[in-house]
Image (tube, rainbow, N blue to C red; front, side, top):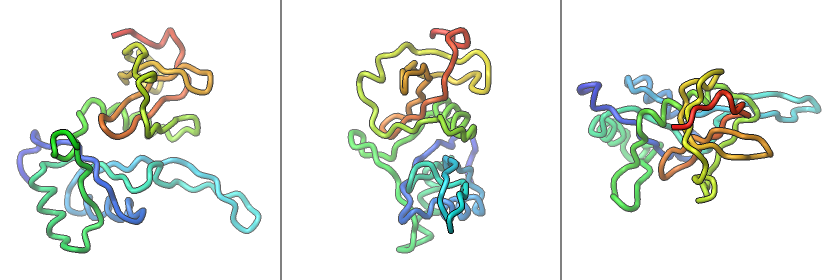
Length: 177
């Protein structure tokens, strides 16, 4: 691997819900990865079973130098499980800013049932005030205040992809940026 300062977060689309398999291969090769997980309840033989599963189908984030990730994916040949998610305007792979990814990971790692993944971000959701959470489990997270399910939340957007919204955040825990 090259100089660690040049590493960026790349979202990659993984085929056939093999996010965890691809993540394991990447980690074995020394890449830093993140697959957002959540708890889901399933019915199995009349009993409720809670499993931890990927929250977003076919998505894995990789922190890497693009050339190293290209080389890794090419080395897998035709059997490569993933491809970059492309920015249509620049015709380059989407790069997630470090701060947005850190905040996204902080929220996703809580794995509480009330965290919401938003696939389509309307202009109305982007209209809220930019804030920083001052305290609590989301301290340091920066995002946009939104109202979902009648409660105030902080939304962190990964440009060109999706967003995640925290659970309820009290007004006194927010600082306007």
